[in-house]
Length: 192
Image 1 (cartoon, rainbow, N blue to C red):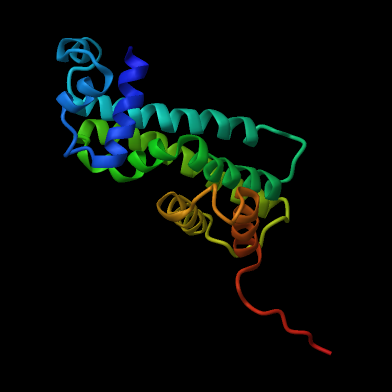
Image 2: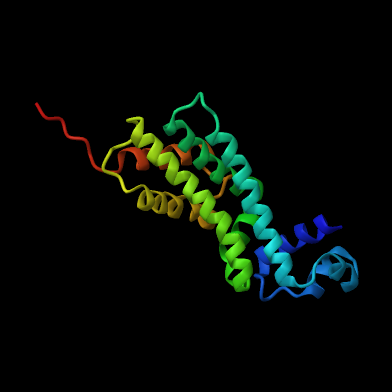
């Protein structure tokens, strides 16, 4: 039942927003009483926190698998991590939108706990950039912190506009992003 409450809440929060969705809306959608809701969650805010934690902890678990693969380059790890985020749009798009949009409704302590995991995800990517610099895969003069904020800003905004069933495939979008990250948009000039 806890899982059903979470799933239905994600759908409602995605459609109506957190503040416009009541506990009554949630229990009506599932066909249970408010008592059932309160058996699993103390408040709607606690439910939102759990949605956030479930989402980021799953991402961290998948990120760890990619980062610990000794047989692929830093460039390939970055490619797979960007693909992980983009693939989640199709698999967990509603959760991702709730995760990025509704965090403002958490209280300070809840935000701190969620942001600690967000920071861990970001710092893992930053370490990957630094490892790639050390291995000669990436330019030496990069500010890894700023680069990662830029990458995550670009990739995370995809949740707002990207349609995985549209004309651009997940792989194509990841390739476009990787080209931008690795090569930029500057036209190559041939010097003879």
